[in-house]
Image (cartoon, rainbow, N blue to C red):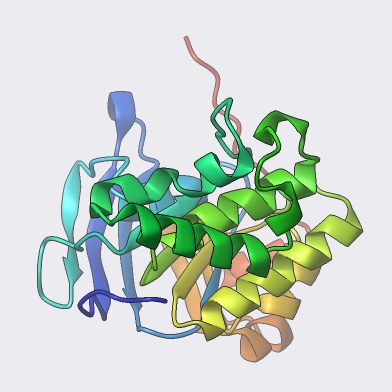
Length: 245
């Protein structure tokens, strides 16, 4: 289902985001290849979610650059799923079809894609139900279905299981792996170190708005290289709290 021209490697060079003069991204340098699941780790306020929103085009950086296989434009094959999914007051099927509108597909093509993704996320039997009546886990599976339907080449997930119980989390993790197998490159944030160990191929560790370490998961969890990552893994890295004047 995944399509679109290649956008990889993605190269971030000295990427900066400083709302009201506050450095949230303070010079991010990062290269992402075209396969796998990258998990972005770091303390609160490190810039993890902002990094994903910048890749999604939802935030405009104040400096630096993002190059998509040498181009400044990523193309349409980027989708993002948030911790709390935004759903329409409509049916499950209508919500799953929402991202397909810009693609100008025929009605039959839309219905076919929606039917396939709802079957794959286990919501085919709820297609005509109101999305408002879904549980938290079902809502997140619907959000994944909506993103999956567009055939994303890059899927960005911001804390996709933070509000879910262990059973719902397991179901969402299984879907993330399946979407990866379907050909999507996944970059996600989580505060759950166990989840990061289970699902990731590589870890991007951010602290203070900078990438302090980017390494394969097994190496990161057994032998973190940066002092910041070592402290974080020991639970000693303090959270950064800023108060408005």
